[in-house]
Image (cartoon, rainbow, N blue to C red):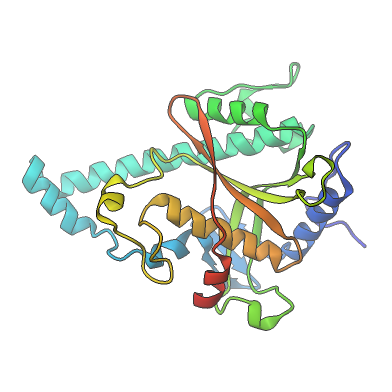
Length: 286
């Protein structure tokens, strides 16, 4: 059988990691992604992305015009001035996040002995004679530290893999809607020889200034049902996001044992946060 597009192997990797990579690439090779407009197309149809799903459960979505008017009354300037400031700050953060993700993807492949997969945008930072990828921002330094600390018991399966829902052979288990997305990293943890501990782990880089909302925690502001036990904050939205990725992999027979956020701060440090599995709730409400 012809190898799926993008297939590769890593020297010394467990056979289960190689087999999972081949299976994922083959199962989802018909999903197209277009950077301009951030569009996912499957058989001519545009699909909703995973990143938009969590926001459905926010009780009071941010009203930019209303909040800008209030902010202007308290702090001066005009509402349009603050809208411009907020949008510029958001654009700067999004651009930095994209750059950091591309660096992380490239470094992950370089560590696995695959420098040919370094992203074009990151190649100016690469010194091939030393096999060195230079971090040029504290968040990239945090990625380097994370990769240096990655134990050899974790084996790369894929970076930046595109997946979509609706492939569970038990039709009643599929989501009612077909959605898609791209997860940052999938690794196979070999359990250090203990099969009971071994399994696939999804990890996602996050570059937010904070994952938590002290205000919403203080006043007990939660998401809408069925996630009303979760505080309305980025950590909760990312919990939903990672469970959706895991659900899509499980639908094709790849069980995910853990979902982890790799939070990168502005000081060049990182923190790993395991998030709970809410895939059962997602199958009921989407």
